[in-house]
Every structure is written in C-alpha cells, then in structure tokens.
Amino acid sequence: MSTHSHTSGHRLRPLIARFGFPHLLAATLALVAATILLGVAAKATGAGLACEANWPQCDAGPYNLLPANLPSFYEWFHRFVAMFAGFAIIGSALAAWRSPSIDKRVTALVVGGMVLTPIQVYLGRETVLQYEMEILSLHFWTAVLIFSMFVVATVLVWKAKLRAGHVAGALGLGLVALPLHVALSPTDLGVVTDYTPTIQLLQYGVTLALITSVIVATMVGRWRLDDRPLLGLLAGTTVLALAVTYLGRRAVMTFSPALDQLYLVVAFALLVAFVIGIWRSRSTAEASRDAPSP
Image (cartoon, rainbow, N blue to C red; front, side):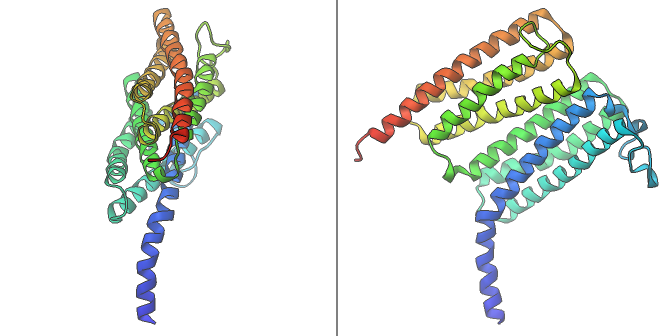
C-alpha cells in the first residue's frame, strides 16, 4: 500500500507540472489583468480616494474592513482582487521554483513578478495616501511590467501548442485593438467626446490586448518562422506598441496637441507594421508548408 502511494506520488508530480502549472499561470495572468483594469476604474471614478483614504482598511464594517458606499466599493473590490492576484503570483512563483520540469526562464519571470509585487503593493498604498501623478504612473507601469512578464511566461509554457499560424492571429488581434485604442482616445481622431470612466476602462482593456498581441507574435515568430526581415518587423511592433501605450497615456494626462500628433503618427506606423506582418507571416508559413521535406 505504501509502495503504491509512493509510486502514485511520483507519477502525480509530473502530471501537475505538465497540466496544472500552465493553467495556474494563465489564471494568474487573468487576475493580474483584472487587477489593472479595476485599478483604472477606481482611478477614473475617483474611487481611489474613497475608503476615507484609509489603507488597507476601508470605511465601514468590523475594523473598517468593508466599503460604506459605492465609490468605496470600487476601491475595496480593486484591493480584494489584487489580494488574490498577489496570492496567485506567489503561488505561481513557488510552484515554478519547486518544480525542476519548469523552464528556468519561466521561473525567473514569475519569481521576478513576485519580487515586484510588494513594490506594487507599496505604490498602491501611496496612491491612496498621497495621490501624486508620479506615484500613479509608477503604479501603472509596474503593473504593466508584471503583466508583460506573465504574458511572456505563459507563452513559454504553452510553446508546444503554438504554431506559425498563431503569429498572424496575434497580429490580427493587434490590428483590431489598435484602431479601437485610437478611437477611444481623447484626440482629434477619437470618436469619444467625453473621456468617461467607461471609455477609460475600455481603452486600457484594449491596451492590454495590444501588448499581449505583439508579445505573442514576436515570440512565436522567433520559434516557428525562418524569416529575418519579418522577425525584425515583429520586434519593431513590440517597441511601437509600448510607444503607443506610453504616448496614449501621456496624451490623456497632458492634453498636448504635439503629443496627440506624435501618438497618431506612431499608431499609424504600428498599423502599417501589423498589415505587413500579417501578409508576410502568412506567406512565410505557407512557403514552409509547401517546401519539400529533406
């Protein structure tokens, strides 16, 4: 009986490493994304200063742990989801660290995310106690860095299931997300007249989709496509997507016509890169399929 249990335990570990960890990582990524979007919603509605500017308590219930009104609920719920995201980040890091079957690059990324998490928590506290634009920006970009690290780690874990066709699919996602990003921005080409909390939430959701698309396309392209000009183009889309994210955020904060114009120019360059990347990745993938086997 004990021998059977010992053997079953050894069989269970590789089973968890192969099937459990990828799904844990994907769930953690979803929680990180949800935390970012809830943080945007809290800031956009002014709820970041709710809970009577208390942290980590709120403004009602035992020990002031619960929200007293709707704005406080937004801030409280953001913290609530962020807590579970933090636990998931720590759990992913510990699981990767303890499992020898996990790619060392994945381990480094999720452990790096775990190291950044206390910094992010501290910055979140400071946004409540001080609410300065510099702190808000650091809080946002640290969250984006953690999100990007987990996107890369997730793609690495799912590498075996990703094919050349996923490059065009990821670029297609970016091609859809980019015009939405511009349309939802408070620029001359934007279709919104009032940059409401709902519009801000939608735009930042599109931003996360845009970042994910270029990361997936670049990584899968390096693995599955033998086309150096295309790989250079894919790397360029990552740089341009980050520039669009930065300039779009700065345009919202400063309302500068010069920044708006630069944002639109970079967005157009990224749009062209997406179109060329989709065409070339499909052509390269088809050529690879049609090539005779050695």
